[in-house]
Image (tube, rainbow over all chains, first blue to last red; front, side):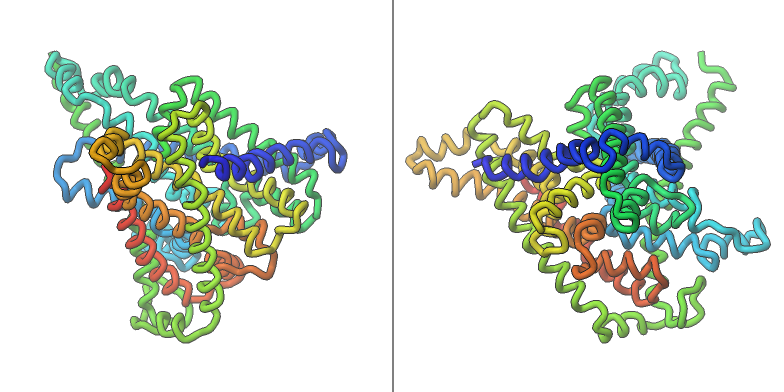
Length: 268
Length: 267
């Protein structure tokens, strides 16, 4: 009964990825596609931008996400957990395009953020927020926080809270308890969360286009330009493979560090 | 043992933690509230704070014919995607879970993997395959890409649900005289129904919301609702989008909230 699913995976998941690698090495300049990709300053810039901004997104999402996940774990009042879960899942519920649109309006020249900054007297003139790396990082962090929370949460539910009480009862400070008792226990969740958020982040397309514009190209935007504007499919395939290799390496490293189960558990 | 500085630093630590959580929760809520607020402005152009209030944008939304066709296409795509994804995954998961077939874990892993791949790279792979077989810019092609996009979530939901249903229940039904098929329908499938409904909703919403595959594979002819919003935000802003976005948020939230509840019913 699994045959249709297996066939679908073979033809629609594995074959396209295989074809991508094959085409990137045989079409156009063959392996030279990669040389060409790395020689292009636009692609080099896009790769660096993508990695730097995805790293920032990962740090922010995992910090906020695991704090929220731990609060969810510890909260006992039903009303508190309900409100927090709703807040965490809101980005999922808003839809991809809608939430980016919301950030575009918030960060626009006449948007709410500039309005409040001016009201507070922090700035005299509206500042450019939209179409900056800051906007992209903010919008992507918003999108990735639910993933970060859901990835970190399962390991947190397995932590025995009495251990923390025991540590404090024996005289450890809260900071010490956090760094020597809690952190080692939740590490698999944090690592899974970091890997998942980073791997998904580097493939982002909608947010860099809507909030970053031409200033902050992502690998995905360069790929789409290569296909639709420059009709250079071989180079697009090469860039896609670079993207894939980065994602798979990050996930592989995480899997090596904390095991497949922590990653799989982090997906829901 | 704990000194005064320790206590002060601990207090600080607690408050920094609370601050992070507070900022996090606020950050999550603001964009949704902001869009909803702007949708009730009657100003000609989007501006903050709105000078006049009203429901003009909703009137625009329901009277203009810009939105009807894309919404119709998105609904059709989402419905077909949900059905196909279920037909593909449900038999597979039941088969894998009840047969202890070797490689079941691998199949499950491979079907969840697209969730973790960079979407853009995967879209290019599909683009190449579709160009080969003539599926670019076709309804069927988009359905295929949306199904693959939905499969991981459907697999996760159904597989977790199946793990909660003990095979002994089926066996018990059979020892009490039920035929294999009857035990299967009356026990396992019945217990699985909420999860199936939940998975269908998740698949529906994931297709209804999808904006990347449609951009790479849809060509100029197929314009779904997310594509239309995406394009109009890129090239000048129609204020009616705030109303569309608000309606979308409410409908999607309600659907996904319901689907999450259904998922919990199994547990």
